[in-house]
Image (tube, rainbow, N blue to C red; front, side):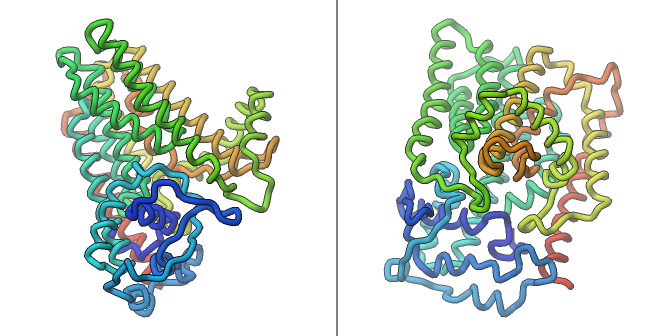
Length: 436
């Protein structure tokens, strides 16, 4: 959060603009000359200049750049010059994605904090929210706690926790949602209370509205927790509440921002509606394309999920990726016996939800990165998109026979891998941005 140079995380400038816009009370942006965004203070979007560092590993952060971005340190934001700023990537995101960041910027503006200070306040707020949600998730998890700790603190997650982007909060929020589902669905001695269901539905609603591809996580929550609700009418009420918190808000927000959509690519004719017609006309061909795309890009997806920092230009050391993978596998094996406490149908629901979300992610990427009818591998797939799905995939794994390693194995592996990941992440950032 502190060492990473300003605006060197993926799309951090766009996320900063959206959070700033929300801090001023503007919920829905506007579209001007084919670009979506809104009017902002000029100094707020000038500070987001990446200074030629992004995509150029030989360019480093210097004191001259720091001094430039620090000016002005104090600002009367009511008197600053304003102009239209385009940020189509984040203009379509709902306000709930940026509650911590927007609140921090709102406070900073009224204290006359300068633009760079506002960015760091937004980073701090997002970091605090991510850590709080992640901590709550680990406290709630009844099993596989050490394995999910390793994923929650992998370098990619850590890097996003320290960014203005909403991804860190979404990852930690998804972990907490799955943890609550596990506690309510598998602990039959625990009496489900309405306040727990209210928290579950709130998290599910926020996640569904944030990105439609994560709607299957909320469906899993509904299917696993619904049988634990006592009484016919309370179950009916729970079902309607799920529709009211997850489906309807997602549909309404989609209608609100439909006119703001701007294709992410201009070099090819991107048309999501036309792409949907192609997929619906021949779904088997699309399934085959997904399988081929995953086969072609599996290595890259894995590396980007574990950690490729900066603007995708800062990989971790080559040796770390197999160490992380084998270490996580060993941790899963050490905790495998805990899967015996879950029913087979519950594991199938979780794996089915994760698989459905993967299909949605690939479908959205196909619609927004490939021209209609393209049979080339799906482009734009990044491993970080799958991090919120990892809890479902891991918790849905079956036990490995009667294998029961010593109780200390999982804690030792978890702590060692999490510590190693933190050291590797911090070292990679320092070497990329400050040392030749």
